[in-house]
Length: 194
Ligand code: ITT
Image (cartoon, rainbow, N blue to C red; front, side, top):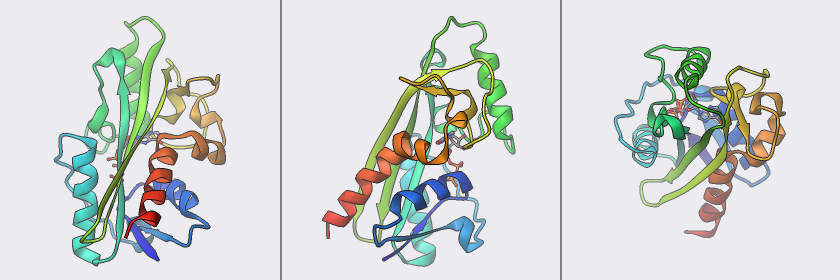
């Protein structure tokens, strides 16, 4: 079975391909297909945005699609950046801009800065809608550490660890992450439903 992953994000694409490897399901991202469609994520929730991405891409290719809408919720910032995680520091901002903005906003709050990553994963094939959520709790630190991963990984230390996700290796992130959890369950639901 072949599935399109409705993402332009190379980091996400590599993670989800690894999660599906060996399952008999082959995953191609928009990035692999050279499709740089800009899908307007106008939903107010991760769930709405995930289905917007999946259904938009299904309408183009008419093949099964998975999508993930994800982000970081920081307690002391009342859940921000949340669904606005990708462009938190403004249109066309870099991951570094977003990290610096979060560090700056947290500088007047006492530590620890509790936060969680959320991944809302969905599947759509024109008939079936399958969904699953995964979370990774942790804290935000006031500096960027490490080179791996993407997004807010350099400022996020998962609970129970003393390294940022960017200091952990790819395979390890892919065992514990919010996306690993959401897609592991999505994969099981997909294989067991018809
Ligand atoms: P697509 O919509 O094309 O999938 P995107 O990067 O815009 O790619 P989202 O809309 O889901 O994806 O935004 C998620 C943002 O949240 C992402 O750009 C990162 O800034 C952050 N994020 C999500 N998962 C993350 C992770 O595993 N590690 C670090 N940051 C993450």
